[in-house]
Length: 406
Image (tube, rainbow, N blue to C red; front, side, top):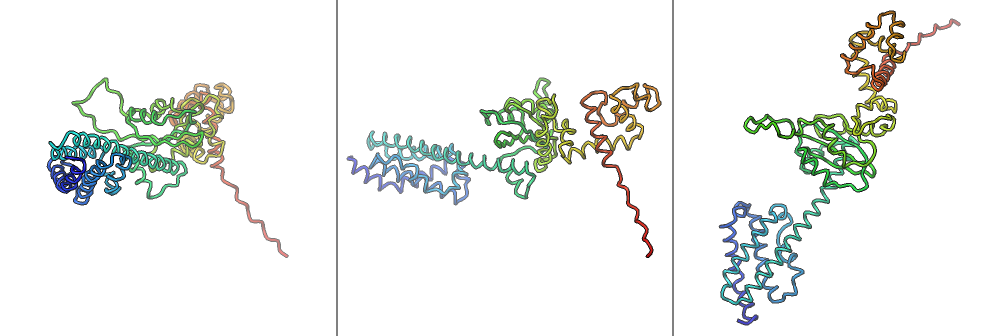
């Protein structure tokens, strides 16, 4: 047949081709038969548009650039979210198979045209999905930045859990925030690969020279005795956040890197973020700041800078437990720190034996977990004592002056 006769014949059988294609889709693709009627109809429109577009392309092969718009414009935008690229390629393959079977014996040139056209459609489909993925990636990045900003500012609302779920957050256990500097060449994909290797969730926020990571891990599940392996790497629940931060440390730029205290859930992460930001702001004040460093190790610097949370933490963890236990412990600790951590000078001031001072300092360490004999911990304890004493001084009440009789 001539090209004109072939075009006439193709237009005459286009309806039969569409019907046969939909029947083949229903018989061979389970995902298509399980679809709701509205989406099945949308997929059918795509198949019919593909057949019609092929006939138009066969008439004018120079129309290749508008194939994608011509075929996929027939489907609603929601179809891209419900039909994967793999399923779209299966749809194209079934349509091509049905068309090839129907045009068999009508000439080799027509079969070659079908194969060439199907290749163009496959590339067009890949381009459509690539653009959709790119748009979705940009939207996810904006949403992630919004969530991280909400965590840093503490301005959470009822929509935060849904936004977190939209980002694919899987963790349901403890969460902490890490604050550091942004490297000159920041590789966010490397951060996510490391997080996946550690089996933790991560939200990334780049705020100029400051890099913020929100780290979350799942709750520990019951171990499977059959799959227990002594050589298996520890799960995220077995690693401390300090270990996780150490693994992520190469992704940060030069400078300090502060780990906020863990909190129970992501919606409470603003507490960890507040401590991490406060620690990051004063990390230069500690000459020997390790990398990474926990925000609670910078409590005295944060308190001196005016951090109310740090002040309250020092009082609650150090001053009040000692005060509740024994006044002798506070008195001994005060004297020991004021006398330059000298046992003999402390013993002379308190009129006790140096061994008594040693015993009381040991009891201090047992009660609060800090050892006053170390220079760094002595500074922390002295700051706590000063803050606790300021907070416990009761203001003197002014006595009403007697009224003078006139």
